[in-house]
Image 1 (spheres, rainbow, N blue to C red):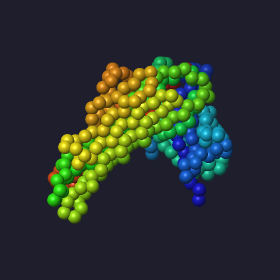
Image 2: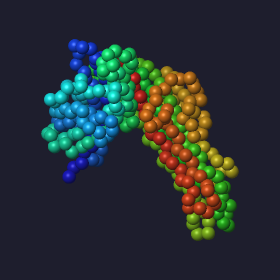
Image 3: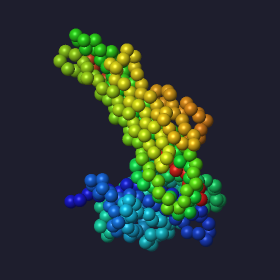
Image 4: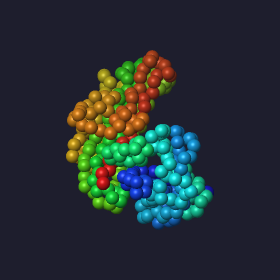
Length: 339
């Protein structure tokens, strides 16, 4: 049976909530089949639910849509404007975290076979403000962690883009080998991904190619072979991220423990393109050394991104329990919208 999956590309608030205005979100997603190929120019059925408290929490709102993908496999719809018997305005955004559950029928019907659940990454300011009785100023943000073609939603004319490259993986620890002598170093940490930010004027429906860097894979600690311990490997470099003409370079991989007489860490991504760019020179750090005062958005579970992979550690020269290295962290793009 053919398998399909839904790639969530973003949710954003498009209308400030006023007494006479509808409450809606612009929602975009890319639909692909099990082989990763786009589902192009075909009708799909969508059921969207808002969950309260957790990914398995109660459904506080549900609606359905019948839409068609475009040549890029992209669907665009308005959450809050679908077929439903419920009231979108009854959601209490201020009381709990909320999650978006999307179910899709790639044949255009109501036999939903694909499901994704993701958390709303920022408070819907206007909806929260309505519940609180005041209008709070503040833009809406979108976090993109997968490569895609992004289309500017209606009414958006200005955006600020924060772009991170992926970090490198940690290198494997070296060990002592008889009758040969290998360096007994820890594996090097990966280098952090570079950073670029830029504000730009855009037009509704304008398209941007977004490439999100892939994390560098970890190396491998030295392993037992005959009477000796060797075969440690270095970590791989993370790849660059791009948003249009912007670029955030990937971080280098940490070197294996027997690479040199001392532990060698991967280099940070420094070849960045944007209005303002930065990087970290400190191993195992994603704190920018260049433009340290530069404001960056906080991302839940990532903390400033992109976190370098850790190098492998030695507990004893001949122990299988040596701590293995870890992978780097993938890049991301953070878009702040202004109408």
